[in-house]
Length: 198
Image 1: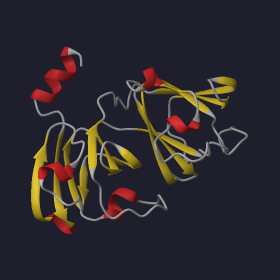
Image 2: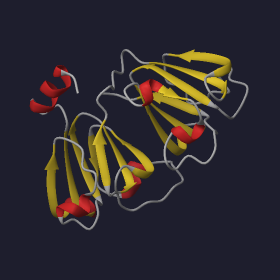
Image 3: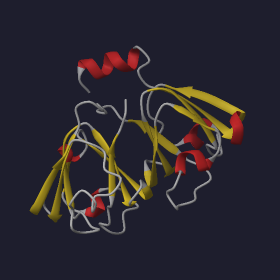
């Protein structure tokens, strides 16, 4: 972790409060850093969330495993608020971590037609609710390189379906095969993508 990231954490750059029950009820706790397993904090699960500062990724299982959900600043009283149009229902989360490289104004990602960052490529700097509408000829993206910032890629157009969080400071920004998009990635179907807002 560099000095700037340490200072940001100390100044409260990342702040999330989690509750054990829906609608901000029951046991709750505030965090300013990652939590690998909420059950180690005597919680059964996370069912509602408030993100006050920063951006987090929530995970279905401990140790940052399973389906990923982007948690930007705001209130998440129930699972529908974080899963949105994902089409994947998980009524609780068990781990989360901050995204430290999210810089909405300075984000670039390169999409590749083939694995290992090869084949036809396309560089993006903006949000695209439909990659096919902007000229990408396939429903699939076999590999990606995050040049700067952090992104959420979605399985379907309109920011729907499984969410894949892609960060510059993970894998050196290189996602050489779809299974590196996340532990839940079962195909390289990606049809929309957006920048993560800090």
